Image (cartoon, rainbow, N blue to C red):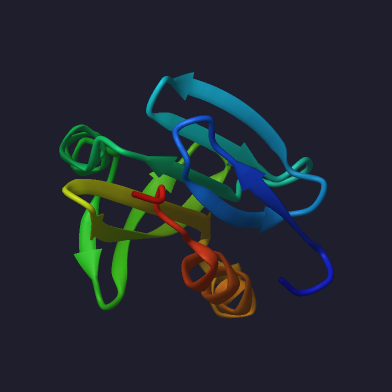
Length: 122
């Protein structure tokens, strides 16, 4: 992985790169949230894609746009992209959210994250 990223290894076997310096919060046994330390960017990795997709649709001001969706975040306008990956019979959701005005600047990070995803072996 490139400089500025770290590997996260889930006890269930999932691996994914995330930006170095971001804090990690275990939400459930199947979901991990990564947060930027000083802005509203987030990355969520979940093995329960149906629940996460239902929650996304309830965001204030939610509407689908090209390559994702937009919504009204607590800190201002946000844009998100949900990437669904099915591997070995399990569906995973990689959920990326960033301020709308920083979307383009953050696409290289999103590319590293999604390309680094590794499902459990076996």
